[in-house]
Length: 342
Image (tube, rainbow, N blue to C red):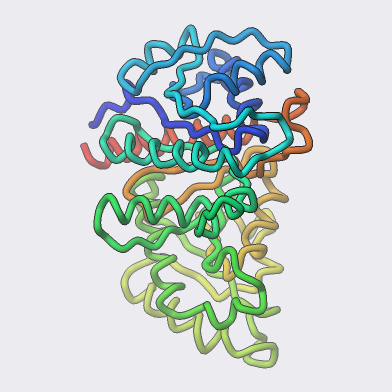
């Protein structure tokens, strides 16, 4: 079995004007009570110090690296410094700090790909702020995939999963307008999303035979064609192929009846056709403790299931539950991956 105990989780700072610093400080403060796995914060130590002061907290911050982070973690918040070009004001994001935000992500990926970190956990970014600085990716997930492709030379399909205590849900299409979903739902995309999900549930979540429930696109899964043709013409043939290859798959299921308590007991993950079909039930069933997990990457990546929340940054009311859950899941997945490799 691979030993991951000495390798910290690489935790990126996200947008420094958001609640990333707040919840990072809160998680570290509760590290003993929550048995938090050691992490290395990649970002500006001055931002953490200023935010701690604003929140009335006394926190020892120590600049260090992956090799020493675990030892530092018990007594100080370990930071690998990436400085922000302009001063950070809580709640007031600046595109001038975008290079530091993406730089933290870049560094985290390099560390995990080099085997120095066990996983990557990302604090929330503000895509609109990054777009202003020339960021050309739809979001975190696509950017991480691009970094992984550059590091490995392999073409990757990143798959977004919302994982909570009551539901795991995967959207096949993610950040596109609803009107564009039917055209984007190709058999190949549904197939690849499903097989990547099943593979990661085996290798990282420790499920020997993962059970997939695949949602239909239309109301009542098309009602035999009366409410749309995609369910029978596009989705069902993929399900037949997946079953023929030995996967435990059911569907296409009407989305309005597949998320109640009894239904959720019959599967391990819901494969959904579009963003809100997956994220509405996921957030309704676990808003504070669901985790965004990126599947299909050569490393483990988790993230809190919320945004930057600029309106409450620095005010002492941000909840750290989702970041705590993201770090906990990252540690669990790293341990499972180590067992699988061992």
